[in-house]
Length: 632
Ligand code: COA
Ligand code: AMP
Image 1: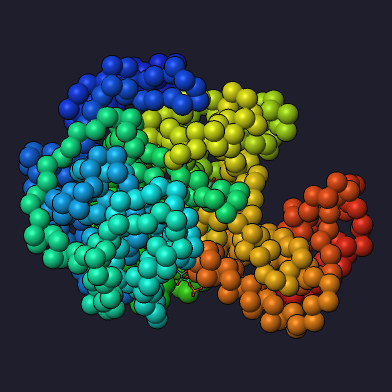
Image 2 (image 1 turned 180 degrees about the horizontal axis):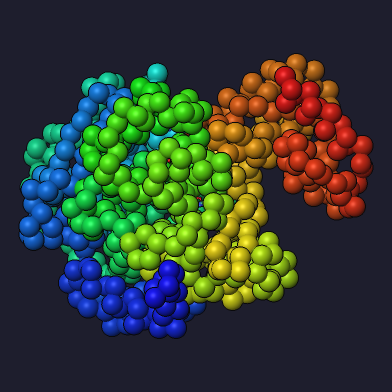
């Protein structure tokens, strides 16, 4: 068999016989009731995997390993350079903590189907919180710590939680982020009144509890009895994870229990090449989908050891932090975003710090979150001497759309490409009219449904938005929102988003959402926001403001205001640091703002005056303004 034949045969089978293929993979999971149908296609595009089956995801992640010989194996290693703490939990210890926490949560009236928001830092209790919800069949929604109170309030109103689990603070290099005041403000802002809050007090900044509503975590757990796993339907929601849409209203991506467990178990072995018992590190955050799938559920369902890292690639304390963690815990693979490697490369271009560590157990580096740019991939390859593989995914898909299947049939790596489609992904490149394009041509990346298990069955409380946002523009396809091409060997390259989503340091943001904040400033008549290229973060947002007639405050002051407003309303993670005051925005004759052209000008790329432009002088003004701004 030639390289790639095994992968190709498997991929072809996943498309020709999806039910047979996924039924076989489902044997990696313990079910309390077998499915009636592997795939229920009766209501497209709302496909359901393993309809009629029942299971508990927490049982699959913890209890079954305790029962079958892994009780004393380390399940979770917490490594926190920002607090100077290292701690490990065996599968038995983690199961016991989770069972008690589930008991405490159940005692607060939370049961199957109830929603619970988790607003915590990268600490073991955050992992326990997710698993405790899963144990009860409650639906968790983790909110990333870098979001502001307003974003948290929007999520509270959308998923109406019975309970919020929080930590008193998060720790960023050089500052402590007090989460509790942000949460109190969010609860104040939200229409839905959160009845109960469980607060994990961190010694770095304990929080004040609100009498009658807030409960101390340790006290509640100490008083609780361990709770057993509650079987749920395979098609019941495990979690909701909000991601940027095109408006201020984020999309609540729903993940089911059954398909998710099957897909993650398959991927740990076949995509990441990890054996149960091995140490695996995903240096993401539990607030992102990557953290859900590969810090928490994937490695634990597979019986591996997962590292939870509370730190940064640089500055905690230096650019050798990643090498230290890999070597100290004997990690065999790392999954991170290219931006982290760009940060390391910037500080230690010759890899001097790397030479201090023994990385002999390390086999593979996986990159995702943004396109793995060839210079970063080549640098990592030079430094590490192991395969560096880019893989493409989205919050919506829960796991990979394309990747290089290192545990199945590793294929030659083409820098700049995220390799080949995962099982069940039937990808095409489409032109504007929705017609398939030829190999090598760049167009919209779309997939023929059904999407494989583990992908989102719908959006929370928004079936219609699910249809409209993903299945309407190209009838018969799932619209990924990304553009790229497929080459003659079937390798896929993802080049850019086709909508107003931008990618800042591996974090997904909507420029439309930033524009809503800019437009709400009293002095701003009109605005636009585009993502401009940044050497470290990939992209950063840049605002353009047209002021109302008669405003005579200095531009700098207004820019300072809007920078603060974005920080306050969306959060520091938006990394909105600058804006340009302009006389007018360039528009087409029909009034559409020419954001794409503005972005090209800002990036110093070649650009053409669009034929549809209303007034060509406006673009010249913008180009002049940007020249001054970007050179200053
Ligand atoms: N809680 C509160 N604030 C947070 C936060 C959190 N959990 N995470 C980030 N922030 C804040 C930061 O403090 C920073 O604030 P500042 O503007 O006051 O400095 C801002 O949000 C931006 O943070 P970040 O994106 O982390 O930028 P950085 O300059 O501190 O670090 C990198 C740059 C490249 C090191 C960092 O972005 C990184 O590690 N990215 C990888 C992302 C990733 O793994 N994504 C997952 C996809 S696979
Ligand atoms: P998120 O939902 O936050 O995971 O962001 C998903 C988006 O990030 C995708 O739609 C892409 O635009 C981008 N992305 C993620 N991984 C890759 C990759 N390997 N190559 C190119 N873009 C990627």
